[in-house]
Image (cartoon, rainbow, N blue to C red; front, side, top):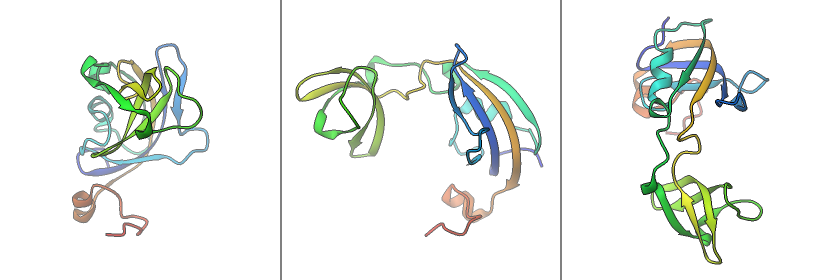
Length: 161
């Protein structure tokens, strides 16, 4: 079966940046990644690259920022009271944090730290980067109507809805 919209995909992937530095991988014993294809759970360029692959297929591809998480943006920089930041250890420029917002917890990167506030870039941590993927498709199956409605797998029976 080939990957198409409303199919669950299980795959292993390796993600590196332009310098070849490993960002994340599931090939080294981690659980495979699973997602519902065509529901914007993955970057648009990722889905486009692997669409029509089938179980057992392997692919190496690269995404420019516009195809992945976009560019860093001045509009996404905010001054946030430190009390709204979730982090471990001291705050410093470049540190990844989570911000408690009315829309839920959002990731951010510290730009500058003051006594009571921090300037935070709310762009995705991978925004502005070229991303390089090695992918191996482990399984593809059609999602049920209930899974499509909920946007996640019910294969393990622990949905809770």
